[in-house]
Amino acid sequence: MKLSTCFIIDSFDNQPISLFWKQHQSLFEEHCVPLTFVCTTPQLSIADLTSQMISDGWKKIIYLGNSLTMFHALNALMKCPDELRQNLSPGFWPLSHFEIFGSLIRPQSLNHAMQVFKAGHTFTFDLARADYEYRSRETIYFWKDALITIPEGERRFSVCLDHQPLPDRTYCHKVYLHPTSLNSMSMTLNEIHNDSRLRLQPAKNGLKNWKPWLESLYKKRPKTVGNSEEVMAESLINPLEFSILDFHTKAQKVSVSIVRHALPVIIPLATERSSEAVNGTLRSLNAGKIVPTPTSSSSLREE
Image 1 (cartoon, rainbow, N blue to C red):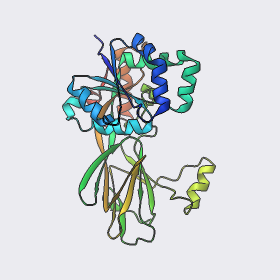
Image 2 (cartoon, rainbow, N blue to C red):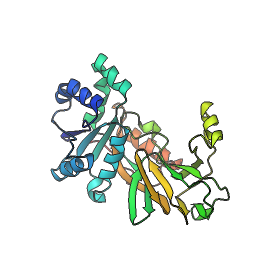
Image 3 (cartoon, helix red, strand yellow):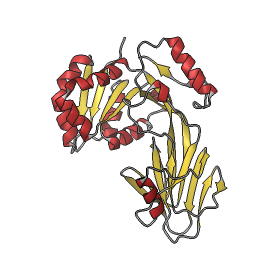
């Protein structure tokens, strides 16, 4: 039996998303049966609605909004106890203005999304966890990347990979986990990557560091400094800055690590694949050390 679907629409102060849902709500109610939906308000944030829906017993929760919506949804879900979170089937659907405009012209372009969410296939992914200290110790989670910026001119600082200090005195670094953004529509079984290591790259800091900026014009990625299970940055005098999308904080110390198999995510899965073919693909991923833990703990399921 299929799980009922709950859509959390991040429409408050987001006119394009509000327009999209008003235009297509009846289409989703027709194809994703049974379905309910709730919208953000000045009093109800993504975190509030997530907690409320989980308390009400919802398992399949679809987040519709932009990239910031997905970031806040991810952190709201990570506040749930692990046993409860592993039984959820969350979907993440960030929509660009181009996609919203296209859906108004061609509503049939939404058929794929409705099929994916109705099927509810999930795969359990790794997440990055950042613990940072300033006046108190806090934790935040992210999917793709985060930026660590040391104040220019600061001499007493260190950046370590697995507790080994880097000799390079670069002031701005980007920490990567997943190569693509969190989006249930763009991830497929053949593109699943539970990256076994964090990747650290030098990043541009405005236009003062002109070389990475110039390289970006030619589509060249900065060279990876190293791969590790943990990245730690510490500034002994002036606090560093730690950023993820619209989240910015000062910190004396930041430690980024990997949470293995932290979050189930709805992904597309070709219906013609048999269970044996799926398991064979997952075994091959394990053999290639893309998925770092045994297949039995990697959760690919159909609701």
